Length: 313
Image 1 (cartoon, helix red, strand yellow):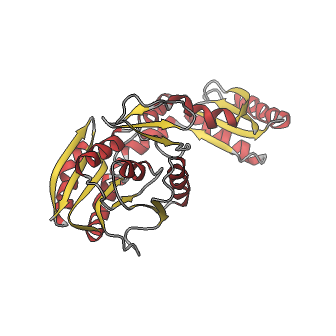
Image 2: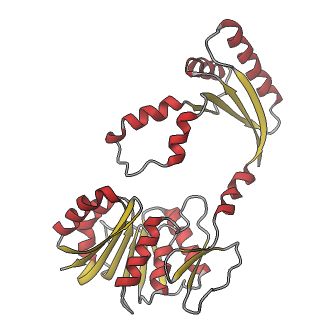
Image 3: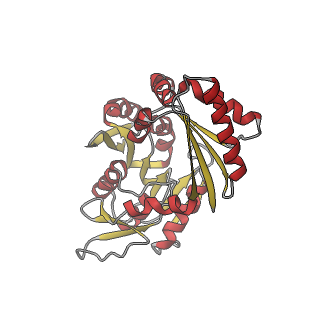
């Protein structure tokens, strides 16, 4: 699908005037890009449940303020109306920045698939390689385990430190035939890895129906639809499965929140692997896990992230 993207570059003063003028003539499909909003959000960080602020968000602070209008591909009338508003504002104000208007036709199929060029086969641990479905790849060694995945735009590719740390701990602590519960299964990559590493029954659970759909598709891609079950659900409600190993790659606050429920779904002597935790929060999360009757076996650090392996005493 093609559409026209019209962007007017202004300054802080011009954003409100321009937005109001556009709405007065019925143009409401707009996006405001104000770098001051990013700064304000960062100043309020402590009031949000954030573990991490992506570098791409910080880059937005350097952008010039602008208002973007989205219109159908043939947008001559819309473009003409926007230009008239810009001309009127330029004539009546001298403090609204450069007030320059630019328009371009955009094909959304370009950005839908553009991210794929950055996802290449990647060896995430000594034994496991993750490859996208659209890349041709041959095993480099006989004992290499390959996971084929199509994460879509909404899920990770498995190459992030939080995921690779989980898999490295699974390689160390998962025993042949273990029952595995993957909490917040997302794309299904940890469920698939557990099966490849010798797990018996594997269940992945996620509250997001889209995650369940993608997870099931990836499980099927790897030929494990009969041995890995991906279900929609909430660990805190109505889940009766008891595992030898539970893995949860989430965020620090979620790990702390779910640890009490995890203890109900893991056998004595079982291993709880959690990740998605900033290194600076390692002790805080470990304390919460200990309070639920676990003994910390290992904290694995990778850059600014860490993963925790704990044994159910």
